[in-house]
Amino acid sequence: MTFVVTESCIKCKYMDCVEVCPVDCFREGKNFLVIDPEECIDCNLCVPACPVEAIFAEDDVPDDQQQFIELNATLSAQWPVIDQKKEPPSDADEWSEVKEKKHLLDKNPPL
Image (tube, rainbow, N blue to C red):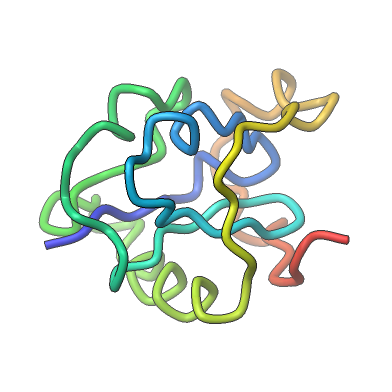
């Protein structure tokens, strides 16, 4: 089993999860983070670290978020490793409570 970053992370990208990950399994996109399922060791440290509750065990991903399992796997193969916490986007707090953000996901790597 692996952990999966879901929709709540889009446009928030607080990165507290990156700071606690012992194996550098996070990958960074422009406005979203993903977990590389091949690198994740299922330690669960990232789940309580996420301030927007965007990370779930694969078996616990809500039904309406199931597509994020495949998105994490696909995008983690394309995006660079992020192993240090960075500043979140300046408008992250404005997006933290917004639901239904899938259409805002930018699948490009960061600049």
